[in-house]
Image 1: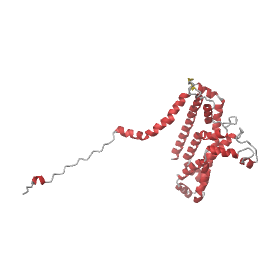
Image 2: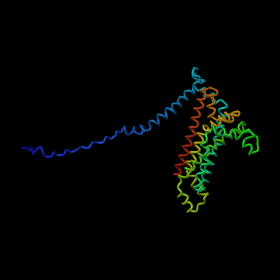
Image 3: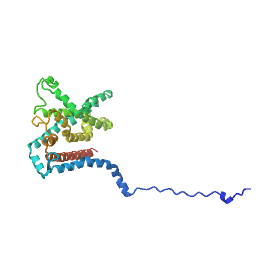
Image 4: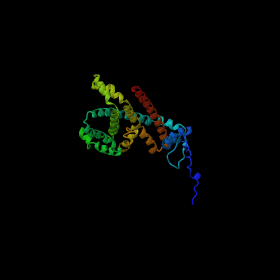
Length: 315
């Protein structure tokens, strides 16, 4: 016979479950979170940009011939004084200005005209139209230099045959700088056209439609609507040309002219390299690099300030 304990079978009342409190980040954690995400990029920026820059500034105060066994002799600011007194330095600055001025038509004027003309091309043919101009940008500079050097062979090259001349385009001081400008501009044209196309894509077609309703002509739409809205893109192209043209011409100069003839194609960037690896004057090369950084940094800051002012005025 079984005895059942009634008290033991009564259901037990459910105990209320206290929900876990969500841990809120502290104020310090909230402030540190963005920097933790940026930390890898900042570390690489310091290691690969700012640390070498500081080393270059330090090296510019020494006299050293790049030999590991040679002592580094501190000379203070004498490298800067010697650099500013060299005619080759001032001449290279002027050649750099001419180079930038000669490239601006290829990176600003022609891309705007080509991109505007591309709007009239039929949609199916537009891809081929764009590819024709962008293809030279994909060619390696050294390969482009080899091909153009063959095309410019005196008397036997395609250029002399077309023009009916026997001019030595690469090794004449009057023509060599323009050869470098034309080849570099030919390569950068496709990139610049692509940037202008992107800028035109960002312009709403409603502006043109509203202007046509008000009776504006195509020329007035271009002058007062399209070009002002393209100003940020044009400012970016000018900034890119100023900052990158001395660097982008280096492979062409080193392959075709080696800075000649008679230094006619030696710009400031190639001169910096020449001081270090031809003259083996590390201090002078570092001083030129520091001045190059300060000069182009100032120009970049001015151009960015102008582009921001123009963009703010357009808004």
